[in-house]
Amino acid sequence: MKKIQMVDLKSQYDKIADTVNASIQEVLDTNTYINGPQVHAFQKSLEEYLDVKHVIPCANGTDALQIAMMGLGLKPGDEVITADFTFAATVEVIALLQLTPVLVDVDMVNMNISIDAIKKAITPKTKAIVPVHLFGRAANMEAIMAIAKEHNLYVIEDNAQAIGANCEFSDGTKKKAGTIGHVSSTSFFPSKNLGCYGDGGAIFTNDDALAHIIRGIVNHGMYERYHHDVVGVNSRLDSVQAAVLNAKLPLLDAYNNARRSAAAKYNAALSGHSNIIIPEFDLNGDDHVFHQYTLRIINVDRNGLMQHLLDKGIPCAIYYPIPLHLQKAYLDVRYKEEDFPVTNQLVQEVLSLPMHTELDDEQIKFITDSVLEYLK
Image 1 (tube, rainbow, N blue to C red):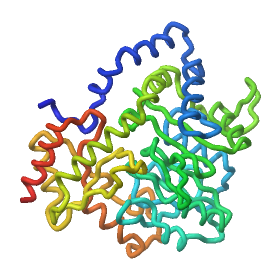
Image 2 (cartoon, rainbow, N blue to C red; image 1 turned 30 degrees about the vertical axis):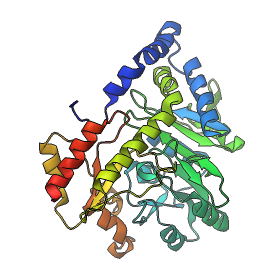
Image 3 (tube, helix red, strand yellow; image 1 turned 30 degrees about the horizontal axis):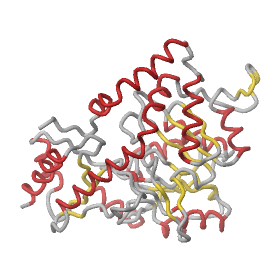
C-alpha cells in the first residue's frame, strides 16, 4: 500500500506534471513574474468558473480577507460577527484593522456559523458578518443574506476552504460559495482544493465600484504608477503561482468529486458506530467539497484514537483544538462560556482523517479498519 498522506500533493502533481511544467516554463521564458499573462488568464478563467464579475488575485488568503474588509471602508470599533470555531486568520484580520470581533457559536450538524447566534449578536455597532464555509461545506447563505438585508450589514464570505461548493436556495437556484455575499476571499495554499505551490489568494465580488477600490488596494493603492489614490498594501499573486493554478482549475470539479467519493466511502465504513458521528451530506449534492473529512468522536478517548492512528502511520489532525474565544490574543470579557456550548463540545470531539484527491480504496479501508479496531 502506498504511504498514506494527510494531503498527497506529490501524487497529484505527477498526474499533471507536463501541464504544470509547461505553464511555469512560459512564465520563465517571458520573464513576466508579476501581473503577467498567466495571472490575467487565471483571473478570467476563475471569473467564468464561479460566474462572478470580478476576481482580484492577491498574495494569500489572509490578505484577501483583510483587503476585502479594507475595501468596504469599515472603521475602527465597527463590530464584525464571525464564527468561534475556525482558523485564527478570520478573526486576526478583524483585529488588525482595529475592528471589533464578535465571536459566536456554530451549528452542531454542519459546524458553520449559527444563524440564531448571529441574530442574537447584532447591535447598533454591527457592520458586517463573516461566514466561514468550514471544512468545505457551504454555510446557510440564504439565511445570512436575509439577516444582512434586514439590518443593512455587509457579508464577507471566508471561502478559503470551500471553492467549488454550491449553495442551494429555497427556490432551487444554486450559486457558488464565495459569490453570494458583498465580497469574498479565498486561499490557494497548497493543501486547498485548488492550491498553488506557494502562497496565493483572491477576492471575489459582483460590485463594480468595490472591485475598483480593491484593485487599487492590492497594488499599493495605485491605479496609475506612482499615483496612490487609496491606502493600499503589496499583495499580488505572482505569475508562477498563477501558472500552477491555470493548470489545476480545469480539474477542480474532478478534484472535488474525488473528495466527495472518498467521503462517501469513509461514511459507508464508519456509519452506525455508537462512538462516531459522521459528517452528514447528500451523496448526490454539491454543497460540500470536503477540504477536510471531520468526524466527531464521542464517549471514548478521542486523543487515544488519534495516537493509535499515528502509531499505525495514519496522519490525522484536530481542527481546531482551542476555540478562538479562548485564544490569548482574542480573550475578551464580553465572552461567556455559556455562549459557546457547541464550539466547546466540538473541540473535544472532532478528528480529521486524510482527505485529498489521490486517496484509494486500499488506503481508505486501512484507515477505517484502524479506526474501528480502536473503538471495538
